[in-house]
Length: 266
Ligand code: ADE
Image (tube, rainbow, N blue to C red):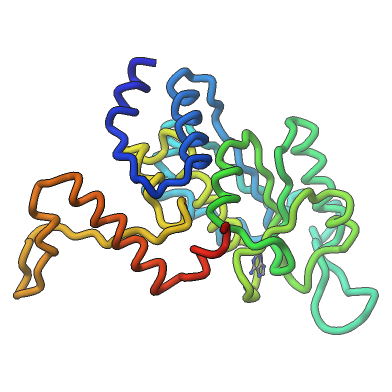
């Protein structure tokens, strides 16, 4: 608890941070330090494990795994196929081009995993789904077990969506060749929000979108590069003035670049 208090002292609370969000993050921090906050497990089902594996083997996400804050398991759907050729797809009854992923291997994989633990969400990546955003990432970052099924080909047999999936999630209004990149994007956004993953717990609080505002600009040395100067105020050493300036910059950038964010939750 003492550690939590000292961390709280260090928080540079920006007025603009929405209170609900802040309370959630602070509670998460408290639980992280009292060891009540559990580790997360993410299971990903795919027919292309090689495409996604690398996303979890570098930088912050790798360190999170090494610290034991998250476990990521990638499963090859083909391994669950009872077909002698390990087939995972078939023609659509409706005809037309494109193969459809069959129920059997997916059902077997989901059954094998759900018989061992309860999943907070079983997500199917699809352009039809709800659009993933920072608020959803925040909510999912407190989950214990998440299962993500990557879509492919023309899609998956509709009965999988009806009987086995709890959520369909899209990463944007465009169509990818498969759901692997979508799964990697979502997992990355979720994992970095798990308490203890970012070295300075306050940094996720000031992310773009965390409070529906874009981040202010950042600068580093030199203060003058060939006449391109850092704004004077950042060199003033006056933290109150700097905080106000950063907030103004966030507001201005959001109004100019993403005015929709200011209206979204009015
Ligand atoms: N699969 C194909 N396109 C997708 C998208 N935009 N989001 C999630 N999964 C997808």
